[in-house]
Image (cartoon, rainbow, N blue to C red; front, side, top):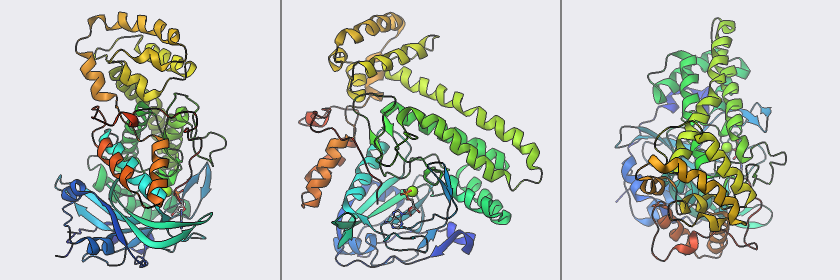
Length: 472
Ligand code: AMP
Ligand code: MG
């Protein structure tokens, strides 16, 4: 049986300025580590025998209909503009239409050098590949918009980082890989025709109801506002919110140094290269606004009367913080079991978070424990919680069914950093059982599962992960 993928490519039609054609570089001994059957069904991707699948998703065989290419883009990294980034270690194989009628990119990450690799080797090692597989699928199960993982393949080759590490390739699926940085590339170069083509393409692909560049800006704003609020609601820190990692679709993209926090802290940073805390947990809303402003700057270049558009764009951007806050409040209200909207709710949620920071309470476990009465035990000093609890009880007097509501939106399981690290070390020595277990348990994160309570536990002091690294 051969693997059939019903490609229906559109990005490749945009023309050579948008990408560089590139075949994956073959690998020595590809072996399929994971394959996401339910996602494959959604994408109408057929399966074949294991070896053939390893050859395809490891990059040794190009499936019929694929048109592998590296996408060009630019972007602001930590606030500094880099005029030339692009897929340095990823290749778009092509697009498919899902059974849901949506269009999806299928991309190999770690498939070898491209025109945009600069000093890089175009490869990925097993750690970041498994990390992205587990965390992106967990995000999906948590209901957060995200790219997804279709397959992971071990290459049988060594990748050189600080030492030799096992190589791997991830098959990433996204509703597109268009980024703020894709628009910046053409705008900064003054390639206005290409910028117009890209804008028309992005509107048709993602927001067909949007009118013109400012309509696109508004649609991206709304999608990003929802995304950032969703991150905040599960304690997720992206870690590298550069404009090239900010997807027009509003999906979470680039699982490099990302992490879920254990103990709540608004200033939490994990990424080893984020020394100034630019992408700290509580900075994420303002960085998203900053990124949207970069998109606005790029989009405006194509307008005949840019001056008039500046006013409109400014209004669109200025509305973003309150949109994020409104969505944030809607999500956190649910997290504390409130369905009615009342003044004072924002203060009530903020007060809880403040106390959690003071009491070093675990973010995930505290919210979950609100529905089973164990929340106070999460605090160093439980009396810090008790004061809040009394106010909360008062506020809940007229609410019904709030336990069930809380259990639907406060997960039992998140991909905790110490488990991810444990999973990676085991996998490097050939044991994939924790990888498989995490995938299984995190697929239904809102229900407690028999025999899996250790995955709920916050890290012991010797297990705490303090720094995460970019996924290279
Ligand atoms: P990231 O930090 O993952 O967003 O990557 C930033 C840029 O570096 C992108 O253009 C990547 O394609 C490129 N890059 C990252 N790792 C590698 C690698 N191992 N080889 C080539 N390019 C890379
Ligand atoms: Mg990136």
